Length: 410
Image (cartoon, rainbow, N blue to C red):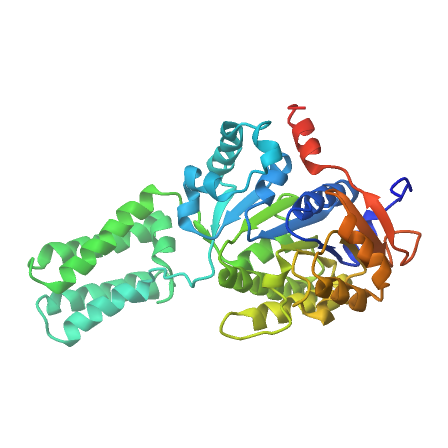
């Protein structure tokens, strides 16, 4: 029966890791979003980061996200129309929440610089050495403008490296951000450009650098792209709002992002102090911890990182929740680290077998999950309830109703 009053200890549900297992359409993301709300209400200092492959959570948690941060992995998604098209609005919400309303919130995130680009590719930032190399190759090969290039080279080395203490690795962005070094740098390059004939190859190089300088001075010097390691640092240091959602639709990129984020987060916690309490939520967990791993699709890295987070995280106040529909091909060692789990309809017998084996549950109890309705779950926990490891059938609140109520739309 569903009439049992069950109290769940949210602190332990977070601390000892949790899984949500159910077939498509049973409301996995609805339940996960509801539990994220409850965790944030119960634990003051909790930082939640959701890695979202399917684009569901920015809508499920829109009321919290309006004060949070939203990262996307594709530059094209910084376009509002594209972003809205990429996010899934449940049919049950479509009639009740206007897409213009969603657009206004995304727009506000964008205007307040809380909608950001997260990239896993190395940044190809121009550095002082790029300019010096361009000059050096001109005078070493004796091409047109060699003498002028040599003079400009020695001027830059003396004025910026010797006098100002910059290095060859200094990004041009930093040189341009400082009024004094910017003037020295542009002065040398402009003089050189004027002295070169239009045919000199160096001239077009210099013109593109000067164009970059003009552009670089008009845009804000805030770095526009964030790396997974920087995000881990921000969250560890407590510099982020309570909720961060990272939308990474491409599975290989998602695995790279998650493994680099977890590696950096655990390293910081081990070497620089515990920092913030962090809950990492991995939706579509089968993408990260399959039982068969390969290095070329990056499942080897993500598997290792997620398993390490599940095994070691608790000591360092780093916690993990998983949600997935495909249990059969998951890394069982990782599954066994979860101390609480919600199971809904899993039509495939083999999926139910894996759950039964991983958590020592009776097959008969799991058979009953095939008759569950949306919002009904079998819940088992070693740590988060008084009924230690006793399977209980429960009905959970509907996240969508809470969302609408919080926006005054219900």
